[in-house]
Image (cartoon, rainbow, N blue to C red; front, side, top):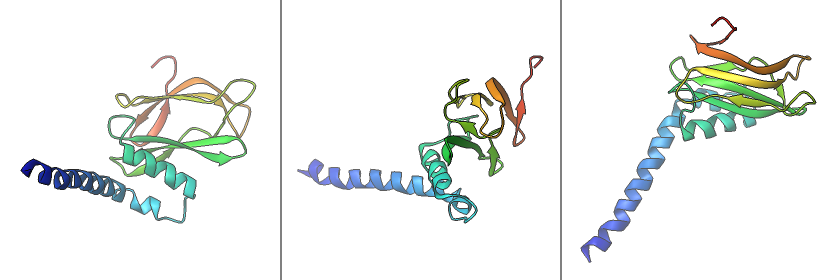
Length: 143
């Protein structure tokens, strides 16, 4: 009988603590979420990834969103610098040269892109960048 009475309050406390934790995390990006400088799609994509947790470079967040005209845009939110870093270009979702693809991991500070730029004829053929000091630095063959 006593166990039954404790289960419901314990479940409530657990769920409530998860809600509070996710609300605290989102408050870290409130200045972006409530800014008029960004589209609703951009803000929703950032917020969704932020609630899920870091997915790049141990503490940072990679997220993508549609930017119209068959293009996909993306950014990295740097937790340490509280800054947004743009991908090297906006990419076509698909093209004759190949579909857009991005490769990254929570454990490393390297991100690689494959796809055609939405701006010009540049094709990124698994071009890799190192994320350092709030910048994407292209990795050349000698590095």
